[in-house]
Length: 153
Image (cartoon, rainbow, N blue to C red; front, side, top):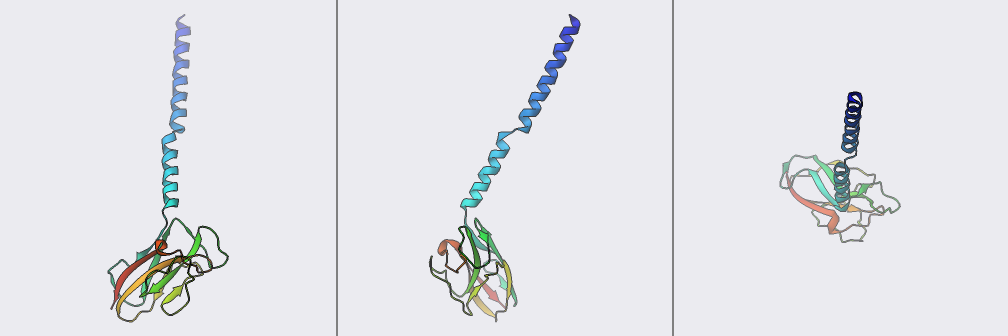
């Protein structure tokens, strides 16, 4: 009889250990949080300047690091949902949604998918606008634009 009680206790103990391990390995909370964060990032679409910061005083050539969330960068070409590339507008505001961004000295295209660049700018104050557009340079509008002001010494 004593052997049977010891045997049941040992099996009960092993069963509890196995159950605890299974529950801790299959924690629903950790997987749910990562899914929610992934969905939040997908829903948040924006472009931004990683560098320079708004109001910065910089020297030429000006290093610019372009940031993007919620979309993917791809070189210019066929239009694909959720993809595009950067443009820098010098002393300009955003381009209206759907308008094609022309190439000029003050409208710079990064159709190879670049995310950073060095610009030669003469001393002065500049408004730089980062504008995201699709594969054929059609602007995503104000929602995918960000402007900063810098001073070049």
